[in-house]
Amino acid sequence: MKLRLDSIQYASSEISLFRFVALDGSELSSINPGAHIGLHLPNGLVRQYSLINQGESPTSYLIGVKREDNGRGGSLFMHKSLHVGTVLEVDQPRNNFPLLEDQNCSVLIAGGIGITPIYSMVSRLQELGRNFHIYYACRSKSEAIFIDQIADTKNANFHFDDEAGAYFDMRSAIDSAPEGTHFYCCGPQPMLAAYENATKTAKVPSENVHLEYFSAELDNSASSECTVISAKSGKRYHIPAGTSILRVLLASGADVPFSCEQGVCGSCQTTVIEGIPDHRDMILSDEEKESNKVMMICCSGSLSDTLILDI
Image (cartoon, rainbow, N blue to C red; front, side, top):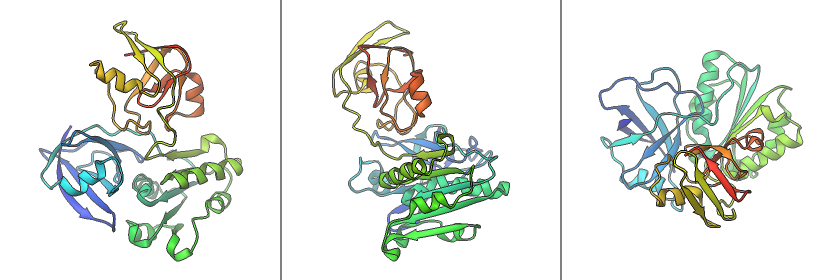
């Protein structure tokens, strides 16, 4: 899609809200809670951002971007160089963090900028009249967004490290939920690590544990060398150790989709016809990884000498 940046709104000390609309003002594709879009920035970067709004036939897409001075350049460009009226190419919404809307109880846990996909879930669960609890943790209240809106919801809990003098008690939030609850968490890596540990320790069924990473947890350059064969063309590609499959394919002129290059967005998901991938992404479930039917070629390598991929 080609969308126009319609407004930029200051939301907190580090976060701004960017709203995009269709060039002709028409309705956009529907948004399921937890979805994200990919922005093709004028400086050549492609970055994924969670959608804050949700619903059928929206007239705009709203995202929140936290300025990361030591990041990979996307957020800095957004904050310093984008201006209202800029037209960008934008990928259609996709969802690796879907909300199960028919559950009796949901617990939503957000850390910092991780509130962006969680807030869309809050909106949807309110519409449906479902039972849910939301926990929103930040280092400081000055870094939080949508405080007033969240405070108006039932069972809202806030935690600010500088006021509490301690980190958010993840295990308490997990233990206080009734049996059968579905849990959703998005935030910085230390929070997600605590979340995974708490849900495992509390013996929460894996199918009830949902999370989304904003950046990679693993070193995605550790795979050994291998050969990748294109099932469509028969072309063979040598993948040196420490180099991603995606980078080799792109350097050879192959036309393959990609975005984050960290295994957190799902844009480069590729069907595996033969071989055993070395899965290093943060999206596929344990069951999907064990099946070896698909892989993320931006970060995952191979445990076998050869991979035949549907490319």
